[in-house]
Length: 421
Ligand code: SAH
Image (cartoon, rainbow, N blue to C red; front, side):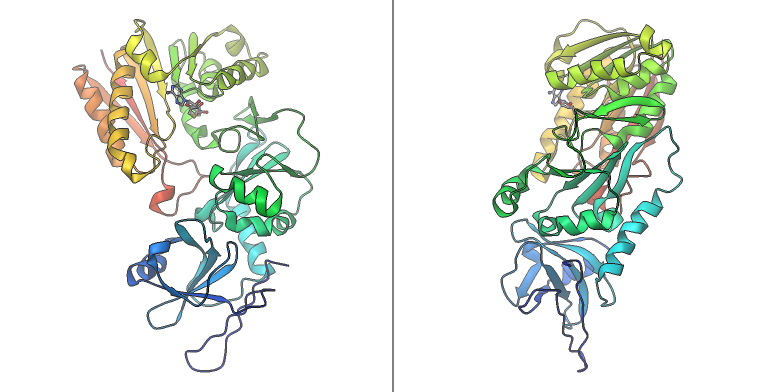
C-alpha cells in the first residue's frame, strides 16, 4: 500500500534513517533555506522550488520528501512535486513519525469529523476535505448528494488514487476532477482524465443535491471547480434574507446559485448575467428544479448572456434593489494584482450606479492575491465615489466547511454595502 511510509529512526545520535514505503531507493531528503524552515515550523504547508538548498537525488512527483533543518534534524515530510513551483506540500511537520495507514486514516477521519453536525438533511452538498487546511495539501473532496467529487491540484496525488478511494471507504460514486495544469501528466502517466468516474455508476447527467432546502444541479464532470461554488453557501443564504420584494441583479451568476436563493427569499424579479451560455442554461434549470416553491415559481427570472464589464458600461437600467457581484478570480498571479484592483474598481462603480435608493450591494472577491482588507477598502472607496450616504452592513469570510489555515487559502471575502438614498 503506497500510503504506508514507515519512517524508521536509526540509533546513531542525530542520525535518522527514513525508509519510504515500497520505494527501493534511498528516501528523498531535502535541505531547505532558513526562511522556508521557519515558515514550515510556523505551520505553512508549502515549500517552493527556490527554497530547496540541496537534495540527495532527483525526486519523482508523488514520492515522499523528507525535509531537514539547518542542524540536520527532521523538519517535515511532504509530497514531492517535480513539476510544480510548490516543490513540497507538507503532510506532517514536527516530530518524526510514521505516515502509515493508521496515520492516513486518522487524517481522513479528522476532516470528516470536523463537518459532523454542520449540516442537516436540508444541505447535502458541502466540502468534506479542504486541501491543506484539512491536512490534505492540493486535494479537495466535495459531496453532492450521493456523489463524491475528488479534485486534485497537484500531480503528486496521482500515484495514490486507489489508496485515496480505499481510504474514503464508501461505495458511493466517486468522480475525479483535475486542475488544468496536471491533466496532461494524468493522461500520459496514468491514463486517467478529468471527469473520470473512479468508482460507482457513470453519471446520468448532473448530480442533484440540496442546499438549505433548495435543489441544485452540479455538473460534476465538467463544471467549474467541482461543479458548484459551495464556498458561497452562507452568502447565498444572506442574499435570500435580503431579497423580499426586491428587484435583484446577479452578476457573474454561473448556475444561478444566488439567483435561486433570492427568488426563494421572495424577490420580485431576478436577472442572472453570465458570459457562459452553459451557465445561463443551468441557471434556468435550477429555477425549474425549485418550481414547486411558490416564491420561485412566481419570481420573474431574466437571463442575460453578456460580458459583465461591457454590460455594466452600456446598460441604461438602474433600478435594482439588490445586486450580487461575484466575479471569478481576477488575480491568479501576484503580477495580475494591479490590474485586478482596477477591474474591481470598475465592477464596483458599475454595480453601485445601478442601485436604487435603499439598495444593497453584496460584493465578493475570490482573488487570493487581493487581501480582504484591500478588497473591503476598494468597495468602501467605490461607495464613497457615488457621493451617496451608505452604511457597511457587514463583511464575511469562509464558510465553516472551507476552513483556511494559511494566507493563500484565505481567498474568499465578501462585503455588504447599503446605499441609503
Ligand atoms: N456567483 C457564482 C459563481 C461565479 S463563478 C455562484 O455563486 O455560483 C464566475 C462566473 O463568471 C462563471 O460562471 C463565468 O462564466 C463568469 N464570467 C467570467 N468572466 C465573465 C465576464 N467577463 N462577464 C460575465 N461573466 C463572466
